[in-house]
Image 1: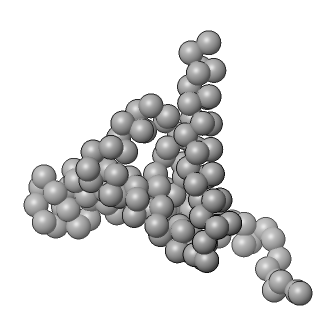
Image 2: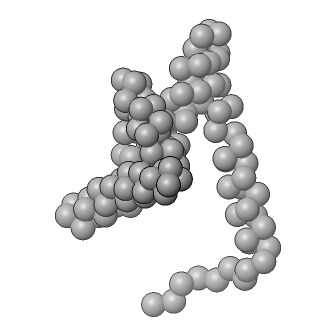
Length: 122
């Protein structure tokens, strides 16, 4: 039963994050790129003030999978890297997100090999 509650918490928090994004898309003139940047910066800001870690502890993947989770990961790496100095603060975020970024690049490359790229037609 505990795993069911873990799934429900992840679904509720991830769904809430996505709902907020959809409301922004529907009610504002913000582009999707600007909303993505806004959510990533929100993740960084919430981790900087110490809130996002509690959300991750509560919801797990429901909080780490959306783009705000990427901002959280960058901020967490920078905070840990800052303990070793200024260079660590600058490189900490990149080193903590390196596996995810590498996977995204590799899978994008493999998808480009498998599928035939073409322009959208109107």
